[in-house]
Image (cartoon, rainbow, N blue to C red; front, top):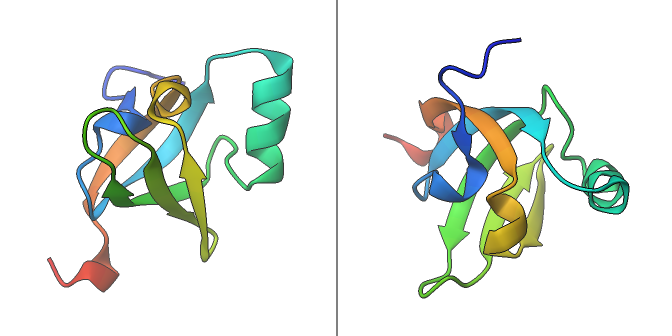
Length: 88
């Protein structure tokens, strides 16, 4: 698996989408994220990002998930551009 074009999930712009490639963190965090549907291979879309380092709102498997920006920085995705449903 190549991480050459991977970026932290927190850096996706609102409406941006990507395929999750890796989670860097402890077992507890990884387990919690898997239970939320965030696992390698999952497609995610950035719905909104709070300002000043606030939380991010994602969509994965049709569900919305809020994560702290610090945790979102430990999740790597391959950017896929805007989500088709955003009309971009």
